[in-house]
Image 1: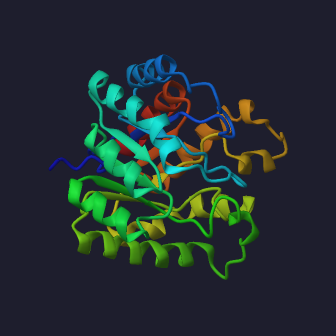
Image 2 (image 1 turned 135 degrees about the vertical axis):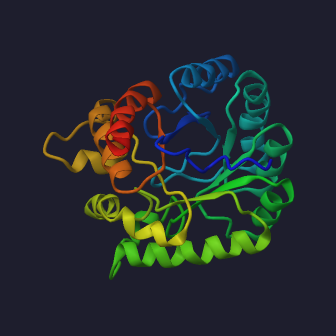
Length: 272
């Protein structure tokens, strides 16, 4: 696993396609619970331009409750194994549980996307032992509590301090292929999310690719048009394009084809 899976090639933004195999995710819960639907959607996203497929079996929407390790494994492990056989791009497992990560890495996943930034020593050890890449995300508390703690003196500075600590810990453990994610929507107010995108360039000093995940999130509904989740594609595209212009190298999205076409323009502008 020597390839730098999370380092974008020059002039090209990496697109991560979201595959939620959950009944309760905020925008597409239940759509891809069936095995064939999930695998088919992964293949379709790759055809539409996804560079990575990110499989998640536990919702992390605000207020979401945790599920058991076994239930999560039952949801994601067979799908990860099949997708890893079916597509030519890397598969990522979106989980906070070391046992889930370990099994999915054994079945062909190559990236761990952890919303708790490998703070669990067992997760850090499992990721390093497998030689996997990792996405380290900032979140306060848990999905149940995160929106109750959004008071920052300087939201970007505090996120950056946390991520610097986690990057150092990951690298010390041997996880060197990594990206950082400031955690749009995870313990932030609507306005703080926009501020994070505007100030993304400040994370460059951490010397890690920056991933941003604004897709269909509720901060987009704070705008005057008040779009519902199924009407947030234009806002998602705009947020992704703004993020790339401010330093993001990876974007995590549900609507791969539309976002790829928009970001191709941004990449062309940046490379011109």
